[in-house]
Length: 70
Image (tube, rainbow, N blue to C red; front, side):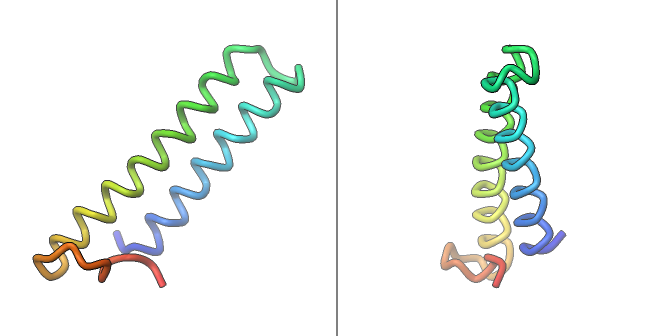
């Protein structure tokens, strides 16, 4: 899995979380979906950063931003 794929998956997760949260607050979905949307958004953000950091270290042994998607 390369950095560009990770970025695409992360953006998809964030969009899904925001849509679920927004729809719940607009009374289009049950209220519990707002909390689920916020959790999905947060998990997507944390996972992207974690995977990028691990990939960066595995890439060349240093944490220098060489793994991030262009």
